[in-house]
Structures are given as structure tokens and as C-alpha cells.
Length: 300
Image (cartoon, rainbow, N blue to C red; front, side, top):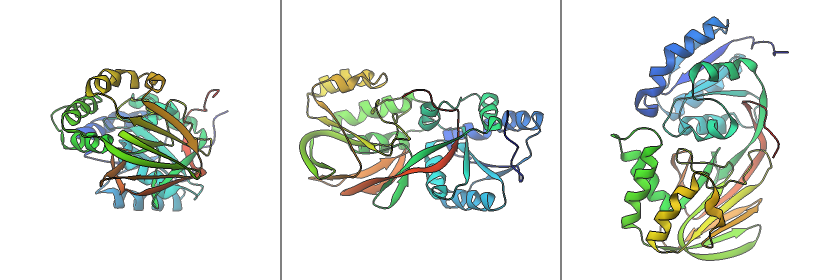
């Protein structure tokens, strides 16, 4: 049985810059499908992260369901803002990476994504918090910091290819760093490429950096990539898309409740595709804090 539609309808929060305009391009099809299904809605073009979060809170306060039509950046910020409120969050993918949608099974096809929204299944998921800043997917640093920056600066390549391009470009300039990672009080020191603290499995347009991570287990998965030759690192990149890179000897996987990360030089930490905080960082989770409208999860 389908749930009753929300009393206040839906408020579509559309990021006009997401996916080089992809979110706006999909809007007519989204609205047509919602109208066909009798789903009352209105559209707000967001003017920035703060405006999007304010509109989401206002929508929830009026009994509307906020629906973010964007990439992972705005979705992550709005999800963090709604965490702990009990308000549901709808998602229609409209960015370049769309990694949260990929992991939870929300289709990129607009009509199919609206069907998920109409079904109304609420899935409680965890929300990560790094130095007080909330995120939904993965907070990473080191080599990932450089690759994220390059991806965000690259405008001529669309879709997931931009992340592969950014990784290759970042590799030529990279010099290893020394990281200190403490998980539930146990310290590990590593000379290498990156540290990814994962609430979810994927980032970078389908790179399953933390294949064992779960959005609803209350834990953080930590993937550390230790030093190796640049050639070995490069040839290992395709394995990340299948999650089989964790089988390599230079990759270490840890799991815990509280994760602290430091390094021997400054790094910006990126999460959900955008800058989040700086090192050193302390990461925890808000277990089950966000009600995401998504298909019911399959067996772990």
C-alpha cells in the first residue's frame, strides 16, 4: 500500500549550477511526471547552500517534503541540516557524481526517481560529522583533496569522467604525506596517498572506495592508501570502481565509532564533492539521524 501523500505537497529545491545545468534541464520531465501522478509541488531555485538549507527547513515546517534536485553537495548540506528533525528528505539526482543516489538505489532517470519519491519509503541513514560539519557520504583528504579541487575547477568535462581526469592530473604533482589515523583510540601512522572516512560506499562518480561501508550501521569505515609507486597507484584506480582495490597490500581498511586524522602538512577535507573542513579532524556519526526517501535496502 502506498503511503498517503504529504499534506503540504513537495518543495523542489533545484540547484541551477548542479551538473553544469543538468538539474534545470531535467526539471520539465520531473514536473510532468509529478503532475501526472497528482503530486502537488512547487519549485525553488536555490541561490546557494545556505538558501537551500533555509528552504528545506521552511518546507518541513509547513508539512512539505523538501526534495533536492542537485548533486551530492547540496544534498549533503540539506541532509545535514535536516538530521535529527524527523523531516524526510527526497532526492532527485541532478549532479555529476550522484553517489548518494547510486548507493541507495535512486535512479538517475527523472521519471523513475519521481516514482521512488511517490512510493515514499523512508530509510533512516546515518549522518557523518567532521569537526562539527555534517556530511552524508565520505570525508577524505590527501591525494583526494587535490583530485577534488581539480574536478571542481574542470568545466569542459561532464559526468563521472571528470573525476577520472582529475585523479590522473593530480597524480603527476603528488608527493606522499604522513598521516596519523586514530580509530577508537588506536593510532596508526602511514606514509601514503589518502585517508577516506566513509559513512557511505562511493564517491567521485562511482568509485567504491569503501565497499563494506553501510549508511545505517552507526559506524565509520576508514580506507587508508599507503605509499606505492605512481604507476601502481594509477593502474589500481580502475579497481576502485568495483571496490576490489581493498585487496591490494597498500590499502588498509579500519572501522570504528570515532576517527581522528592528522597529517604532516595542511589538507582541506572534502566531502560530498565540496570542501568540508581542514586537518586535523575528528569524525563521528549521528546514527539513523536522517529520514531519506529511498528504496528499502537489500540484505547487507
